[in-house]
Image 1 (spheres, chains in turn orange, cyan):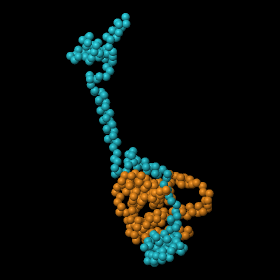
Image 2: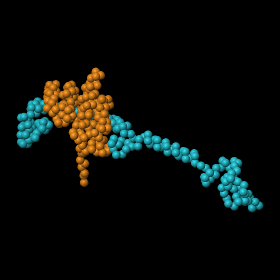
Image 3: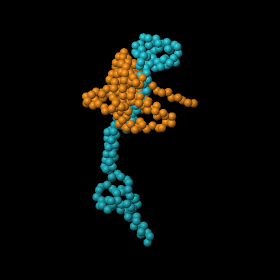
Image 4: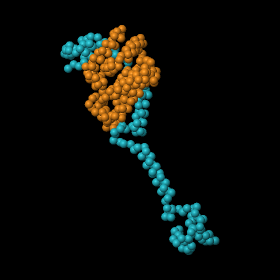
Length: 197
Length: 170
C-alpha cells in the first residue's frame, strides 16, 4: 500500500517549529531557499550579498519564530523580513555610494562554474538554448534597471507569482497602488523589450 | 468570483478558446469592469510570459552548510530551537559541577583518616619506631601476640611464627 505523504502547509510547519521540532525548520529552509534567494538577488543584484541576507532571514526565523502569529500567511512574513533586509542593504549602498559593477544575478561569489556544470542533454538544441538564455538575460537586465518601486512588484508578481493581496501585505502598500505599479512596471519593461515581443 | 490573478493565469487559454463557455463568460465579465486586466489583456500578457520565464537563481552549494553552522553556533552543540521543552545545561554549569566533583574526590582521598584503616598495613613504616601509647596494638595473630606483651610494630608477616617453623624443622 502506497502511502502518499501530503505536503505540510507552511502554517503546520511553523507550529511544529514553535513546539520544538527542529526538523520543521529544515523543511522551511528547503522550501523557501530558492524563492527567497530569487527575490533578494533580483532586488539587490548581487548574489553573494543575497546569500548573506537570505541567511539573516532564516536566522531571524530561528530566533523569533515564537513571535509569529497566524494573522498573515507565513510566506508573507518571510518575504517581509527578506524584503526589509534587501531594502536596508540598498539604503546602505546609497549611503556608501557603492554601485555594483554589473547587474547579473546568480551566486558569483561561490563561482558561476557551479551553475554551468550541467550534464549533457542528448536532446538539447544548442541554438534554441542560446536564444532562450539570451532572452532571459536580456529580461533580467531590464528588470534590474527598473526603479525599485516597480522592480519589487514585478519580481513578486510576475516572477515569484505571489497574489496581489500578498504583495500588498508584504510591502504595506494598498492593493490599488500595487496593481497600478505592476501595470506601470510592465509598461516600462515592454518599452525596453519591444524587439522580443 | 474571478480575481485578477485568475484572469492573468487563464488569459492565454481564454485567448485560444480552451476554456469552458461559463468560465470564458466570467472572465469577460471581469475584464469589462477591471482596468488592470484590460491593460493586461491588451499588451502585457506577452511581457508576463517573458518575465515568468527568466531562469531561476540558486544560491551556492555551501549556503545551507554555512546556515546550519550558524544555527549550531547560536544554539550550542544541540540544535534545539529556542523555546523548546528541552533546556540545555549551560556549559559553565556543567564545567563547574565537574570541577567541584573532582575537588571533592581529591579532598576525600587526601584527608581520609588512616588509623581505622583495616586494609594491608603501610610497608614503608614497617621499620620505623613505634611510639609508646596507651592503646593496645591491633591483634595480628591471637596465638603469637599473646606470648609477647611488648607493642609490636606493624609488619607484613609475623617473625615469631617464622622462627618456630625453623626450629621445628631441626
